[in-house]
Amino acid sequence: MLATTFRPEDVPRDWPRLVHLAWRGEPALPGGAPRGVLELARDLADVLRLEAAPEVRAALGPDAARAQTLADALDAALADWNPALANRLSEQLEGLLDELEALAPEAPFVVSKASKTH
Image 1: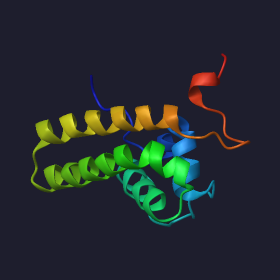
Image 2: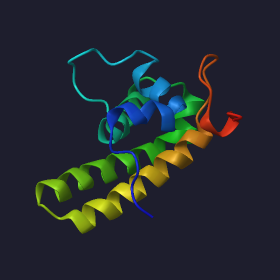
Image 3: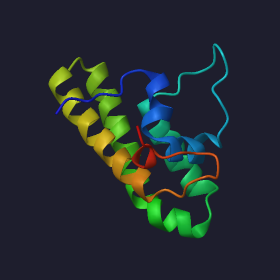
Image 4: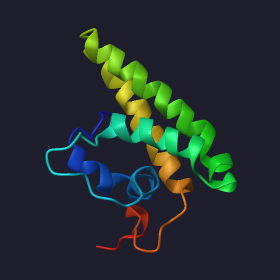
C-alpha cells in the first residue's frame, strides 16, 4: 500500500471529523501555513491534550499521541532523505488517522466519507 494523501487539500476529504476537531471547522487562511497530514496529526494531538472534552480525549488521545510521534518520525525521515522509511511511516500515519476518524465524534455539518453514497 502506498501513502495517498500528499496534498493538503486532500486532508479534509479524507478525515473530515479529525479536521473539525483539530481546526474547529475553520478553513485554512489563503497563503497561511499548510494543513497537511503532518500538521493534522500534530494539531489534533495538541487539541485533544489541551482542549477536548474528557470523553473525546479518552477515546482518541492515546492514538492521537501515537500519530504525533509518527508525524515527527516521518518528518525526520524526510529530512534524512530516507524515502523508504518515510513511505512506511506515512502509510502507518494515514492508517492510524483512518482509525481515529472512525472513532471521532461527528460535527453536525461534517459528512464522514464512510457515510457518503455515490
